Image (cartoon, rainbow, N blue to C red; front, side):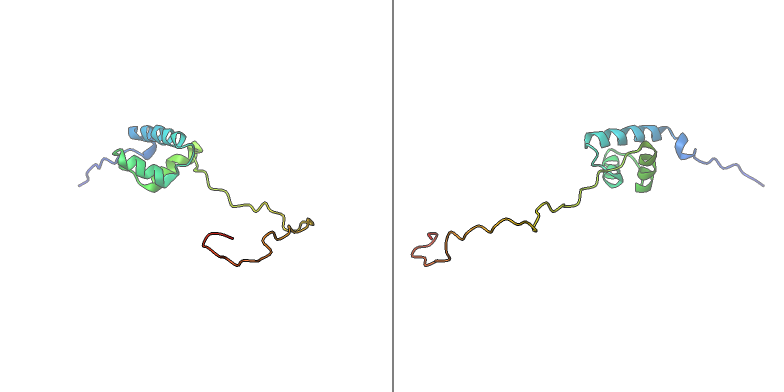
Amino acid sequence: MSTIIELPPPPKDRPDETARQRRLKAMFNESRGSYGARRGLKQLRAEGHHIGRYNVRRIMGPMGVKAKTSRRFKLTTDSRQSYPVAPTVLTRDCDVETPNKV
């Protein structure tokens, strides 16, 4: 005895897949490239889509949608300079008679 089991269509053939692709691309552009898979997932779920993070990643990959990463801090001061050190103006004479007055 055999029965025929109907399986859901593959992910690429689902009609809601293209709607998710369009929405992810729109969210990415609205956020000026800061939305990645996790934030996109939260937004899609808030809008009522039932989707997982890895599916969001799979959709974003071929579209070339990738969140911007923050740049590493770059030190711009050159401490090996040959300029003279500025003179001390206060001369460290700190006999204070009243508060907040030098």
